[in-house]
Amino acid sequence: VIDYAGRFPTPFHIYHEQQIRDAVRGLNKAFSWCPGFRNHFAVKATPNPFIMQILKEEGCGSDCSSMAELVLSERMGLTGEEIMFTSNNTPLK
Image (cartoon, rainbow, N blue to C red):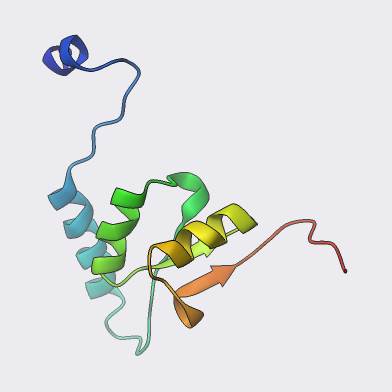
């Protein structure tokens, strides 16, 4: 990490793609008894297209709570039942 801090501006985040994939696969395996199970990733937690692509490839949908998160999910190629929209304070009109 110290080596990376000397090469990249800080602060930064480091993600390990294989660990992400392994975690999602483990979750999917744990819920394999439930037909149609799909984990929906909270876009608000990490609105990073690269991470979202990995999660999409592993079968995850997205959980959006704003229009910007919904647009990002759609641009990532997620559609219909792959997207859960759980907005707060949504106006009636």
